[in-house]
Amino acid sequence: QVQLLESGGGLVQAGGSVRLSCAASGRTIGSYCMGWFRQAPGKEREFVAAINWIGSRMQYADSVKGRFTITRDNAKNTVYLQMNGLKPEDTAVYYCAQRDYTHCYSSTGEYPYWGQGTQVTVSS
Image 1 (cartoon, one colour):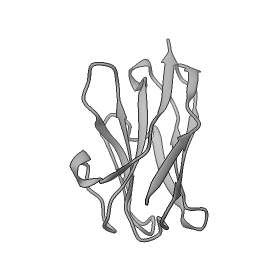
Image 2 (cartoon, rainbow, N blue to C red):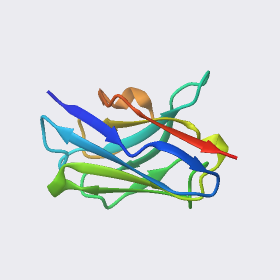
Image 3 (cartoon, rainbow, N blue to C red):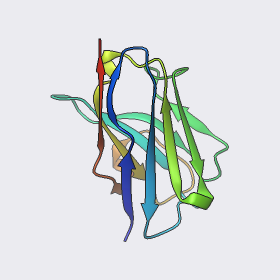
Protein backbone atom coordinates (compact mmCIF):
# COMPACT_ATOMS: atom_id res chain seq x y z
CA GLN A 1 0.00 0.00 0.00
CA VAL A 2 1.46 3.32 -1.08
CA GLN A 3 1.71 5.96 1.63
CA LEU A 4 2.93 9.50 1.14
CA LEU A 5 3.81 11.79 4.04
CA GLU A 6 4.41 15.49 3.49
CA SER A 7 6.37 17.67 5.88
CA GLY A 8 8.00 21.09 6.01
CA GLY A 9 5.01 23.39 5.86
CA GLY A 10 4.45 26.32 8.15
CA LEU A 11 4.11 30.08 8.37
CA VAL A 12 6.51 32.21 6.35
CA GLN A 13 6.72 35.86 5.39
CA ALA A 14 6.29 37.00 1.83
CA GLY A 15 9.56 36.70 -0.04
CA GLY A 16 10.71 33.85 2.15
CA SER A 17 11.49 30.22 1.38
CA VAL A 18 10.23 26.81 2.44
CA ARG A 19 11.23 23.30 1.44
CA LEU A 20 8.59 20.62 1.47
CA SER A 21 9.43 16.94 1.65
CA CYS A 22 7.35 13.93 0.70
CA ALA A 23 8.47 10.58 2.06
CA ALA A 24 7.00 7.52 0.37
CA SER A 25 6.53 4.05 1.77
CA GLY A 26 4.91 0.89 0.51
CA ARG A 27 6.72 0.94 -2.81
CA THR A 28 9.74 2.62 -4.29
CA ILE A 29 9.16 5.91 -6.07
CA GLY A 30 11.98 5.18 -8.49
CA SER A 31 9.73 4.00 -11.33
CA TYR A 32 7.01 6.63 -11.05
CA CYS A 33 6.18 10.23 -11.72
CA MET A 34 5.80 12.33 -8.58
CA GLY A 35 3.82 15.54 -8.35
CA TRP A 36 2.95 18.41 -6.05
CA PHE A 37 -0.47 20.02 -5.98
CA ARG A 38 -2.06 22.65 -3.77
CA GLN A 39 -5.50 23.67 -2.65
CA ALA A 40 -6.41 27.06 -1.25
CA PRO A 41 -9.61 27.62 0.74
CA GLY A 42 -12.63 27.69 -1.51
CA LYS A 43 -10.64 26.70 -4.58
CA GLU A 44 -10.06 23.51 -6.50
CA ARG A 45 -6.90 21.52 -6.12
CA GLU A 46 -4.36 22.67 -8.69
CA PHE A 47 -1.16 21.41 -10.22
CA VAL A 48 2.10 22.90 -8.96
CA ALA A 49 4.96 20.75 -10.23
CA ALA A 50 5.87 17.23 -11.34
CA ILE A 51 9.03 15.25 -11.98
CA ASN A 52 9.42 12.13 -14.08
CA TRP A 53 10.77 8.85 -12.78
CA ILE A 54 14.49 9.60 -13.23
CA GLY A 55 14.32 13.33 -12.63
CA SER A 56 15.18 14.29 -16.18
CA ARG A 57 12.02 16.26 -16.90
CA MET A 58 10.21 18.69 -14.64
CA GLN A 59 6.96 20.49 -15.26
CA TYR A 60 5.69 23.59 -13.46
CA ALA A 61 2.53 25.63 -13.28
CA ASP A 62 3.04 29.06 -14.82
CA SER A 63 2.32 30.68 -11.47
CA VAL A 64 5.38 29.08 -9.83
CA LYS A 65 7.90 28.91 -12.68
CA GLY A 66 11.22 30.43 -11.70
CA ARG A 67 10.34 30.33 -7.99
CA PHE A 68 9.69 26.66 -7.19
CA THR A 69 11.94 23.68 -7.87
CA ILE A 70 10.94 20.02 -7.67
CA THR A 71 13.60 17.39 -7.09
CA ARG A 72 13.70 13.75 -6.10
CA ASP A 73 16.05 11.39 -4.30
CA ASN A 74 15.07 7.90 -5.32
CA ALA A 75 17.56 6.35 -2.91
CA LYS A 76 15.72 8.04 -0.05
CA ASN A 77 12.30 7.45 -1.59
CA THR A 78 11.63 11.16 -1.17
CA VAL A 79 10.58 14.06 -3.35
CA TYR A 80 11.07 17.73 -2.51
CA LEU A 81 9.57 21.07 -3.40
CA GLN A 82 11.82 24.07 -2.83
CA MET A 83 9.70 27.21 -2.75
CA ASN A 84 11.43 30.58 -3.00
CA GLY A 85 10.05 34.07 -3.37
CA LEU A 86 6.82 33.07 -1.69
CA LYS A 87 3.74 35.22 -2.15
CA PRO A 88 0.52 35.41 -0.10
CA GLU A 89 -1.29 33.76 -3.02
CA ASP A 90 0.88 30.67 -2.51
CA THR A 91 -0.98 30.03 0.75
CA ALA A 92 -2.57 26.58 0.50
CA VAL A 93 -2.44 23.01 1.63
CA TYR A 94 0.26 21.31 -0.44
CA TYR A 95 -0.18 17.69 -1.45
CA CYS A 96 2.27 15.14 -2.74
CA ALA A 97 0.98 12.64 -5.30
CA GLN A 98 2.25 9.62 -7.21
CA ARG A 99 1.29 8.22 -10.60
CA ASP A 100 1.41 4.61 -11.67
CA TYR A 101 3.55 5.56 -14.68
CA THR A 102 7.00 6.98 -15.36
CA HIS A 103 5.93 10.19 -17.07
CA CYS A 104 3.87 13.05 -15.76
CA TYR A 105 0.66 14.92 -16.42
CA SER A 106 -0.79 17.91 -14.63
CA SER A 107 -4.31 16.58 -14.06
CA THR A 108 -5.24 15.47 -10.55
CA GLY A 109 -7.08 12.51 -12.05
CA GLU A 110 -3.79 11.03 -13.28
CA TYR A 111 -2.57 10.50 -9.71
CA PRO A 112 -4.14 7.67 -7.70
CA TYR A 113 -2.00 8.12 -4.59
CA TRP A 114 -2.07 11.19 -2.35
CA GLY A 115 -0.64 12.34 0.93
CA GLN A 116 -2.57 14.10 3.68
CA GLY A 117 -1.14 17.50 2.85
CA THR A 118 0.88 20.13 4.67
CA GLN A 119 -0.22 23.72 5.25
CA VAL A 120 1.86 26.59 3.90
CA THR A 121 0.80 30.07 4.96
CA VAL A 122 2.50 33.13 3.52
CA SER A 123 1.94 36.37 5.39
CA SER A 124 2.17 39.75 3.69
